[in-house]
Length: 132
Ligand SMILES: [Zn+2]
View (cartoon, helix red, strand yellow):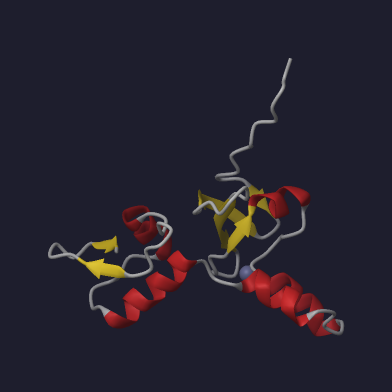
């Protein structure tokens, strides 16, 4: 008899425009996933929202929909689009450091999820990055 509902690992599953890449940093009870959207964004989405069907894109889908419809709630659309801290760090690394040519999924596999309390990236002598 099943007593506990096991959390389904959503890696590599597709939800609308989103393909789940990795499980992101876990905050509390929520499981977030770094996804790749068909438009090229890499949003972090709550696993529950994917399963429920609440989130089907990085926000570009609702942006397209709201272009024909009046925007109901600006905050919701904005929140959905929020980039993951890892993605933001990757963008910063690309602007600040030369030689960061890896695309985000490759880079993310090297650097890993951002540990809680560590917000900066340090470039090591060998050119790789580490959270500090
Ligand atoms: Zn998108």
